Length: 271
Ligand code: G1P
Image 1 (spheres, protein in one colour):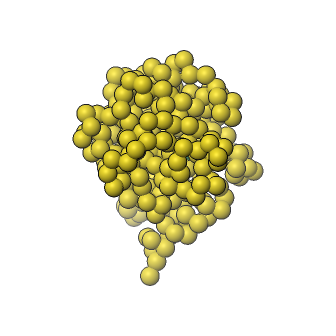
Image 2 (tube, protein in one colour):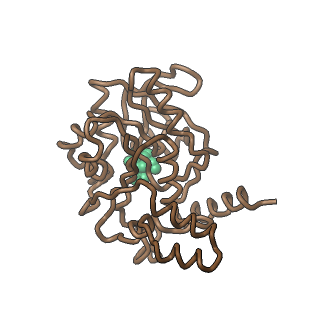
Image 3 (cartoon, rainbow, N blue to C red):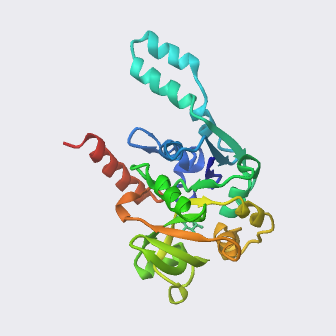
């Protein structure tokens, strides 16, 4: 099973910093943000992480390539721990496919179709770090309970913020699980069917890839993954796992990125 991480965006919210440095390479405490997301994907039992990159953002690829010279230099200088870490990162099962133009999340996900084949797959959006690394496993358990249904993570947000997200409608089936019967991308507040926002962790069936073949741009002029998720409901089941706000650390804006650095630093090195 593959874990897909779309990373072909322009990083506009971080300009001018992201003119040269890809947004995914911004440092969080001591490593690029995308490394957390890759490790989360692998912790879920995925056999490979597929990063959907833009051809312009080679630094992301360099980060995950082996660097035997650096490893050797570090060992010669007695820095064995650092050498081990550099070596480990260079050997993670990470591969790359390309989205030539950022046409929307649905288009980005579809770029990995040859990798996912006829299997279910995870999608992890890179703006949020999930330090617990267990969210996808919990989603997989819900999918297994429901004959391999699609499962997405959702976060309750204040009603006035719903227009920034995909939003679900559905019925609650247990404490933390809803059965989804509709999804809409960035609805106006008065049209939002709930306050449960699509968080950015998905476990999806291969049917989604087929639906994305014919997907057209909609909200914001972009090809939306949310539209394919809504469409698949005519044929397949989908469940939403409600998560706690503390499970995700946002890095999507300079302010939340800085907050996340502080929180994770405190968590790791705090007294
Ligand atoms: C994307 C998805 C949206 C989801 C959001 C989570 O939107 O399209 O459904 O709620 O991520 O961050 P974006 O933030 O890329 O506009």
